[in-house]
Length: 348
Length: 129
Ligand SMILES: [Zn+2]
Image 1 (cartoon, rainbow over the protein chains, first blue to last red):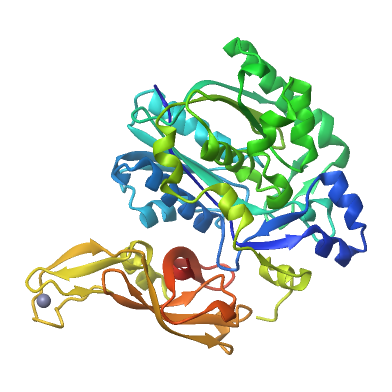
Image 2: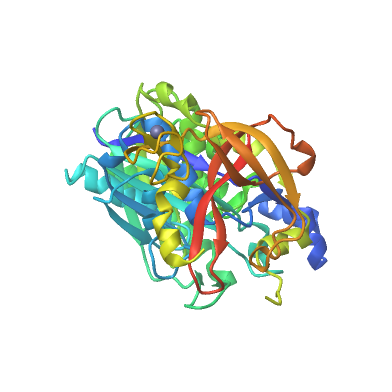
């Protein structure tokens, strides 16, 4: 049995409300909140980035897995906001948590699905018998250009998963990936903010890839939506995952546990992975979980997990996603937010 | 923080590795070459507990150029559960919440950047628990 043996997530404490961003640009906050089903988002501290978020999530994953970090044979971090263009984020992470130096690391990049790519490769290496444990992480501190629609949702957070074949808390039963060349969103080398082609973002990108990956996963597994206790899809806003779920035949109730977007925002590579940790935090033995990510460009990775009776031993071993989401928030106004995110030109 | 020194200090800054004297048991952080207690030069590497309490603190309102834009920030002396004391920034804190004796935990944060194109330097900071 191969699957998740430990998981952890991390969200920064800072938040900004949709109202404060809307006020800055003279937009109607009620219309945005209604349209995006989004109320506030996480903001990284000035001393936080994809590496620090990944390290905290990895430490929580290790607390749950209770394994010797030296036995982890690979660490992959998926992000579109790696702090270095050249120098993998996991080089810092392994030294911070005591993995390696006998370890394989890489940085993955695929817009919002880089995290599930990391999970998929980590899982595959363990399944192939190459190593005992492998870690896959999705984390981001994404930026939307000032005044752009993405500025309301682009947030910060991440999740880490240790794959293994002993003491598995959620077995991976099936996977499926679906990819095509779709120009919905991209960022050129050396550009600070991404560009998106508005009309491409919904139907031909997000929905097409998630629904096709989801359908293929259901066919492969010979399962039907009603077999699942939980489902989680990439969450660029509050509405899209609910619409994608409906198209595939999932109910609002099945999405509830992992639907964390309205108060978190879109953590990009961390989006469906943090949603999965919110589900694992409350899951029961035997629960089936359906997950499909989405990354612009474009592609989707799908997973079917089956929760084991070991889940109850690990849920309380580290902080839960919803505890970080609901507590200890520090609100920023737009000026502080602009400073925190480096949107102000400084004379230094 | 120049690159060679940053690299040399990674074990202590990332993983709280300290030197425990093989003769008298004194724990030195950062690690030393000679035990300040018994002058022994034999040490074993130990990892410090990442939780402790705040012994004292101050608020920095005017900092060096490197920390421009991050002021005001809190700096404190923390006593870890295994008795070792260290100086560290206190992150994510509303200054009204700071009290001597408060429980803290060390987390992994970016300490500074070596300019616009240089290294990102990481290490520990305390947060209230
Ligand atoms: Zn000594």
